[in-house]
Length: 504
Image (cartoon, rainbow, N blue to C red; front, side, top):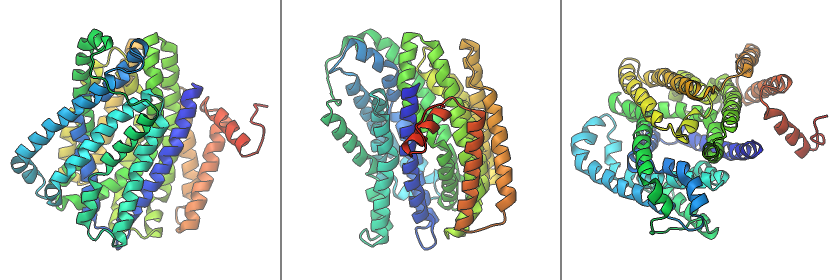
């Protein structure tokens, strides 16, 4: 677990550095006198559509890499054909997606997004963005198996956002003279990141392509086809459910991209809660794949428990910090006033993130096991709930509808997966620390809100945040809510020169 802990901590630092950069970008997008809400909403639309393109075009090749990499490593070391197929299949799939999108643009796209005319106008520029995103997601899965999660997280969370920061600053300075120029360069952001990743792995001798079919591919060919067929359907359903809210808002609501911008603002804030989840998943996938191969259920159970409590601690703390300072932050940093409407959207999205993270790496445990077909079944439940609820609640409650829909759908979705793991393996993610974490969070939040809820300004944001952090960290250490917290704290003390890091 120490390796996963170390990788998770480093990855979390990288992810939060990326999110800090993302918050800066969001400030530049949403400040008064900056970009319009429609322009900010368009960038969110690009990301939502690219997710769908990836889900269709990839044919679940990231799961193929995650599941079968240990077998290629053990039985076809050195140069093998796994990475070749993992990249060729999505390229072919993306070509099919491109042709279908072009064929049905006039029939489907233009009519669906009539409330958001900028999205059809820049529709063809989504293709390079989607291709880059698809290739990066495959390379990310490969990086995780190479134990290069920190590097892939850096490129995804920092590299991409740094590219966007440069574009925003160049546009603001007048070097890029219009938003039209901005969005056309933005379309190539992920392709630029992909080239850097390929160059990095090539220099290390880790980017090897072979067109000779290995004995591992021949031996597991039928299992690979079965895996990608089920997981492809499941991941397509999951990703569609994840981004369907933005699509529905842009399509259904009047001035759809402006409404999507407010929803995207709330999504970005809730993503701050989710940052440790990305680090934990990327650090856990390799060990989980190996543990299933070795039939080491005790190790899997340990990862399950610790991922649950660690993510719950992070998510509860981050949710509380953002909620305590949400309105004050909008006024203090002089964002456009309409973004204050994102607060209640954030409430429901934030609670969704807490539930999703608090149930641990259940998706990754199922996905790397021999029972990955269940991902497809549970995904069908998620899609059925998401599609119906998103559309109906958006029509009746505007941008609040998708947030409520996500909370309901993902709560049921995670409950089903937790039940499945308990039934099959007698694994469940919760401990007494789960309840204590919720109680500690409620107590610390109540104290800070009662003392400072009527105060405004940057100083009060710092004071509120500092007090909550001290109280929350203090209670976490005192109650020993996670077995990973004390070793991390001792390491921090040692690095800061506050002690020798021993358990005396």
